[in-house]
Length: 233
Image (cartoon, rainbow, N blue to C red; front, side, top):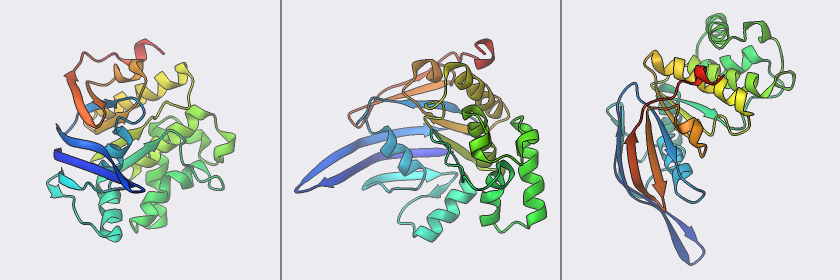
């Protein structure tokens, strides 16, 4: 599903250059649930941005579902993001003046789907995350956990190949974090490929593989025995 080979990324810092990723190599098979961990400055956010086609590596290759991701125009990058990827963010990134249903339906609008069809699909995904009764509510009327569930429904609505979750529990209390991870595990159980960036060890233990970054290199890549979130909720 994902194949990263010899990935390098540097940023200009005035007269100097900061080498953030230093030859990253890893593969992600279809249906995996893995976490990417590392302290601030380890390169995990840069790696996620490259995986999400929000940035591009200086060297190396990135293949996503058989497609070589390189030298994309912004238009083509947006097309591939919409086709291949769903995003879940720590800050939810919901549109404040749109209700939950409209927020979930938004990616389908950009796919050119007819209004009736996209609303039906958006409602089906709100039902999936247990929020059908909250479809008409604005984000400021929802709890943090509910906002994240809406964000997950939105990410799923376009039927992406891969979900990229950037600190999806970072703004939530422990109980709500585990409820969100329970939902993510259920989605993975259905065969969806999911990458979770987190600094929380208990959250990482709820995935099936942990990739540890330090100073721009992978220092450990380990398959683990997954903790089921439902046992902690």
